[in-house]
Image (cartoon, helix red, strand yellow):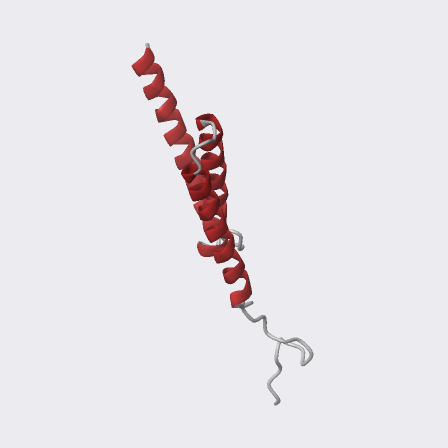
Length: 106
């Protein structure tokens, strides 16, 4: 009796998709560019301090997204729970900062 397989001969097993170094190089260059922008804004002394704070906050947020997406692979499937955990942690920290500000200024 010949053994029968549940797989057809035309199906190939799913392989894990491997990312090449191109995306990592692009993310690294983007991270360096964001860092250089932040340094350039701080070093230039003729800029309004509010604008400096805004640029620093913007580049920091972009840097966080680049780090999470490319270096910690949060853009890939199967990372829903870590993303929920990070989001909850950010919510708790912002709540604590708002409470501390309210308590300090009251």
